[in-house]
Length: 96
Image (cartoon, rainbow, N blue to C red; front, top):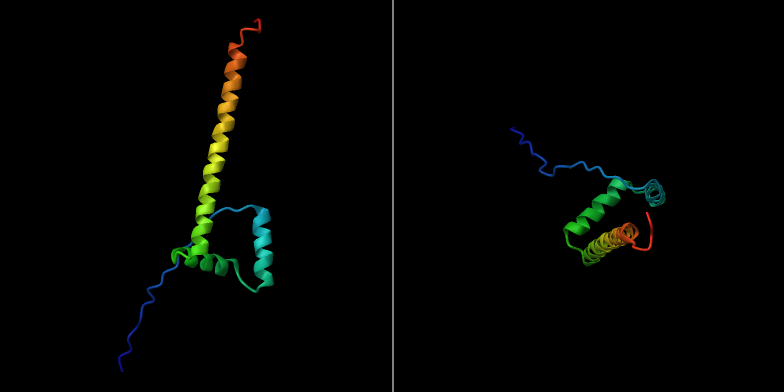
C-alpha cells in the first residue's frame, strides 16, 4: 500500500510588535482568566479583520481617525511653538 503524504498548506507567520507593559499585563491576566493564550486572541482578532467583520472595520477606522487626530494635534503644537519662537526672536519691544 502506497501512503500519500499530505502537505499542510497552512503556514504560520511569526510577528513581533511592542505594546506597553501595562497593556500586556492586563491582556495576559484576561487571557488567563478565560483560559486562552495571547496567540489565540491575536489569531482570532486577525481572522476577524481579514474577514472584514463590521465591528473590526469600525475599530480600524476609529484607530485611523485617532492617529490622524494625534498627528494634527502634534503639528498644531509644533506650529504654536514655532510661532512663539518667532515672536520671541522678532519682538520689537525687547532690547538686546
